[in-house]
Length: 126
Image (cartoon, rainbow, N blue to C red; front, side):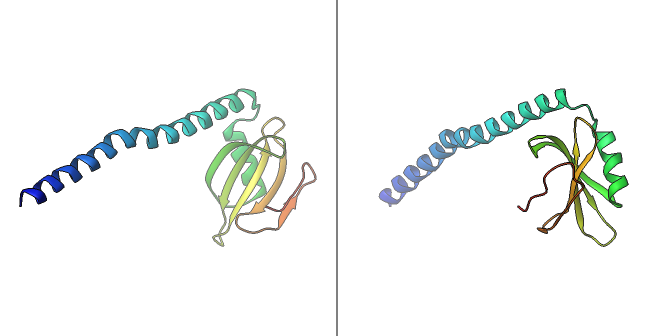
């Protein structure tokens, strides 16, 4: 009986130690990645001449539907707004807009390999 008690106590201490000392290491790496992504987004926003509102308006002129996401990203060797729109047929269209000029670079159906290019950038298969 005393052996079982010592084993249980030892196991509890081991699990507790892992949670106390292991937890910050796991969350720290995730937190650093989020911090780096936030810093990159802030830097990109400083150079973007097109606002998110302007990008959404342009995207809605290109694809009808409801905007579900708009994000500033580095694609096509430049900073672009990626606006995702859900159409009436439940498909999701991504519209990439040059954050400097406001021009539509290309559109793509999310999850589909075929892209439609407007000639302003390279359309590539993922």
